Length: 261
Image (tube, rainbow, N blue to C red; front, side, top):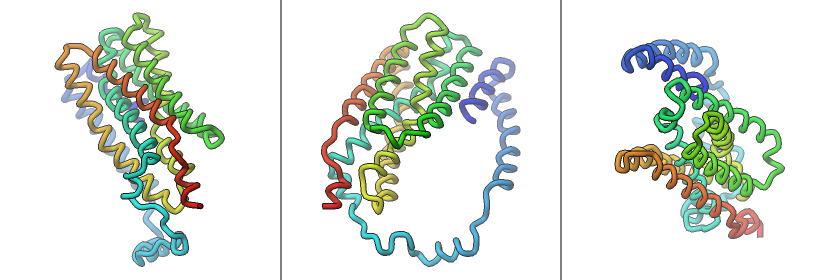
């Protein structure tokens, strides 16, 4: 919703009103919608759920031993072949999305840059839903590497292309990977680690990704201010994505197989 509606709306309104007025309009519109959505769709927990939560017991895992620890995971190269490349890739994604309008404004104009955000967000939805139908039957490491390489190529096209059509196609390619990259950490943990460790390890991977991707917008912005253009930041982003693609292809052992042995 942020990419499909809010970002293009902000760009469109900012061309007609001041930035402060634009934020007031959007905020005044979205707060009632959010409150209504919470009231209608967010359910209170049932009595049984509150009782189970209050007992402090995880019934599903009482008889299932915990085969992995956080310390053991952090010391494992196998763990880092999942966490490190996806953290790098998602940091680039977050940085690009934050700077997308500013990056594309010179070549596409205000309205065109807003449309590019819309294309990126729509393709993120299409990619996530489309691949979600059969992603469990794919080699997910190769898929991650392909998406990372495709995004690096899309960034190259955005940086070099003079045709608006080529830029929009590149945004679509980049967006296709956005939705899938977000779910790949959990999918890889689910496939390559014992079921009992899924909750702990997926949370650990995602926490690393969240800390790392917070630096994405600052990296692009700082380099943009230091160099006066987006050329160097985009080249660095491309390098990070290609490096991540190489790392995620490294298969240093199956933790699930080791736990079962």
